[in-house]
Amino acid sequence: MNAALERAQSLIRTIPDYPEAGVLFRDITPLLADAAAHRAVIDSMIEPFAGEFDVVAGVEARGFLLAGAIAVAANVGLVPIRKAGKLPRPAAAVSYTLEYGTATIEAHDDMKPGARVLLVDDVLATGGTLVAAHELVSKLGGTVVATSVLMELEALGGRAVVGDVHSVFTA
Image 1 (cartoon, rainbow, N blue to C red):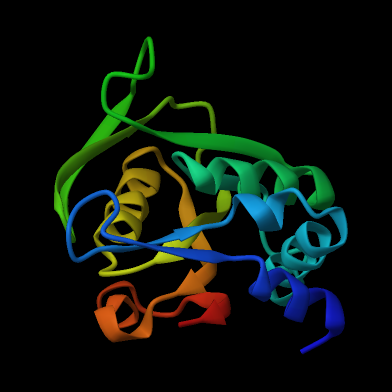
Image 2 (image 1 turned 30 degrees about the vertical axis):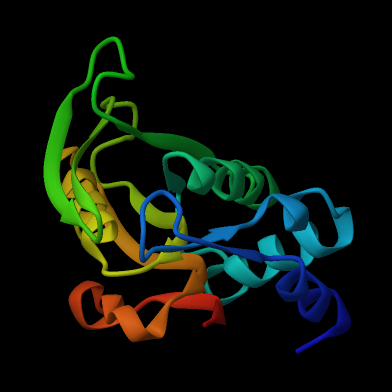
């Protein structure tokens, strides 16, 4: 791992018992505030998939921050995947279970049919959010060609649920 990625990893804080008891929240805001670390992470999230995708789909909320930077760096568009009730005209929705409750995600139908999608999120935990996002992209006529996350929490087994995922860091 290069020095910028090592620095990026060192900037991720673990916050115990947030948003509820027993959950270890990974705070990436210090990493985002460091330009060199942020750039190294974005480059690492794109590198295995250069030229393979037409659009980036980012999962709310911290996935937006990474996906937006990736879309600009790769010169492609961005499709935000939002929590239910945040979009004025959702075209599709998928409900799922996550490690501390249930949720629904939605998206507009702004991607072209047949679009090759790089799906981006900050953390892979149990995999529920990314599985739902895969389903949502499919409902919208796109194909997820790759999934890239900043950090994979291996003990929670999300990779077994989601399948092939590129993660910059593991914990």
